[in-house]
Image 1: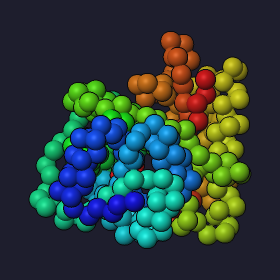
Image 2: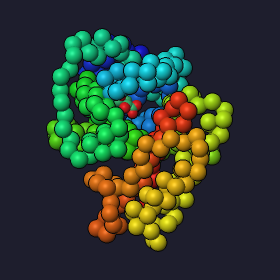
Image 3: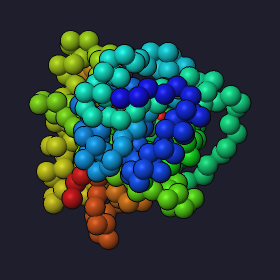
Length: 280
Ligand code: PAF
């Protein structure tokens, strides 16, 4: 596996692979890799001749400086895991390499950007859109892989690709969970033993709530989930939202909705965790 820190070097490598007629898959990450990321790599390796992963903790998508400081960074371990899992190249740029000057782009993706994570983390999705667009420009992949755990991020990236006619396919990948249901996340490694023991209840409440969709309205399901989370004293819920999967619009009724999903964000000790689950 080749390791690149400079954009020009990575571009040369991609140009040569393209000249050889090879297809290119991109897996953008912020490192601290876990099985969730490795499932994206596995799918990308299966679909493409060449797979490039990026490992870059993108400062402009953090609205909270202490969250950025504490974000786990394990570059050597990440590189070893990527190599072992069949990645062809990893791009690990410095902040200066990615942002020699401040980027002033302001995206407006409408409704899908202003709810849930967008409402709680101002500027977050603008920072995500800027870095993902840059990575698309640098790598020009045929396919790019994103996990459904960050479901709203995935919806925004799909919209960016449509809005700007970016010639690639976005491949959504299902959430990977520990055997007790906790969604894999780089942030899980910051949970202490007691917090880690409680964390699976995030998914348990989602699973329990969705079972009631035939007898509950969306508002009733929302209140049910809030009540269940409220019974766990260490959870500090930021939001529970029940939304249409395509538009991310809040649902008042199940009618005229092809697929509905329940979303949660909560604080557990020092760690902010998110999860989601399809209702139907
Ligand atoms: O999901 C992530 O890890 C990040 O938001 C991404 C897509 C790599 C952009 O920094």
